[in-house]
Length: 571
Image 1 (cartoon, rainbow, N blue to C red):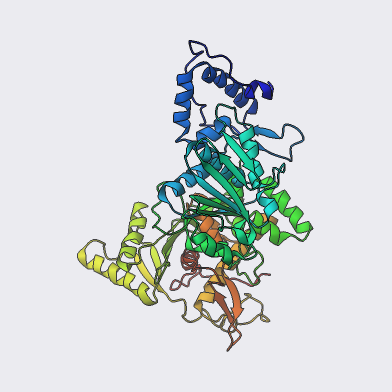
Image 2 (cartoon, rainbow, N blue to C red):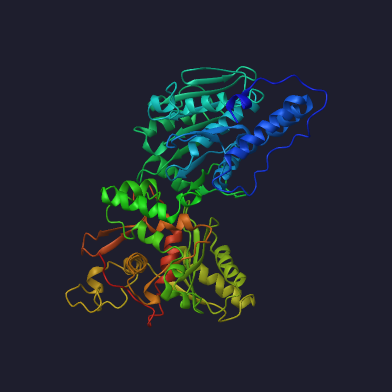
């Protein structure tokens, strides 16, 4: 099998087709893919299409509305790390396929989006192939691409540059599917349908005329992003930021914080950025062993913060005084399945819920529900009516056929109305008295067990009342110690009791968002007493509602028996 077989001019058309044309089946792909089989299918299918005008016409009609199928059937991608055969058919793993659907949703909804990605997930290559499909099948389309330096946008002959990626994809298409194209520096044009892809760099991004869609590669790393935003605001309605993370407070992070996680059929309000997350675990070749080896290498070279940003997508990696380290949070995912001594108590009968109530602006309600030490459920929603919030909470518990659950709710401000709605439901007979237990949780309240030591049994450690500024600080620190001890148990085999640990079930749909929010708050000292307080919203962030709900679920405000463990200070 050679490339001339695949890219040769069409043979003379015959009167009868060899066999009916059909697209390649994409479901249930094994990994790594059988690239030889894909090339064999292409050669066989091209013979069919070259023998039958009708079949070729049907194929173009089919691909004109199916970008993912077109890319996987006919486009190639490039891996410079391979020793040989650096080019290969573009076969998606599932999350890459989802990304094409994300792009199409942005196109049809005329909304902007953001891709928060770990390194080496193929997001830029997928976006480039998608743009090739667009200029082939969408007449008079105008696409923009930008990055921080011109050489990253276009350097002729260098496939590391964005425009050259697209040229290479086009050159390797069979001529039946290749656009009638011409190209120059920073420009690719399909002369047949007047569609164009144009590149820009640095502060000039967004100054080259209106575009139907504009892609910004490595958007978190621009030097003067505010200038670019001002220009793009008048240039396009559909802006797609693609980037690994680069700390808190920059434009990329602020847009990420203002957005909502996208999934198929997600109900996201107009004007709110759609957020697509590509986690390293989404890549079928990236195993836990791969992760551990990469992390160990980064630690040996003193580059933990870079690894945390580019692999773990941890915005707080370079932020000082983070309360809960991101690596502790990742160690807690499915900890009950990995710590043998905990397996027997993972299905405890005691349940507790924490509820954070939305109070202003883009704030959201959130619920976290735990079974013993295992977090089983978490979600957030945007409706800010406390009555609706109360009914959503009770509905979540009833769906799981749970009764007698203690619900610790944010009782300050508008949160107090949740209890009022609960009382109304009891009076109306919709809820039985005692079916659930509503417990107020006051973040600014007094310290629990004020005269106990922060480090239990260590008379040289401070008293709780001298160390914590308020109940919220004590609660976050207690949960912090659960994560720390869980990390120690998984990493070094340290032994703890179940009530000292925490496990996050991996099937929670909003797990990635929850992990990010837990790693967001930082600690500081109050100006009056120098006691520890929690800064939940460092500059450029929004309230960690899911994180707050989890803390409420794991730090009982009223039930202070054997389960209340403020925890001991750990380095």
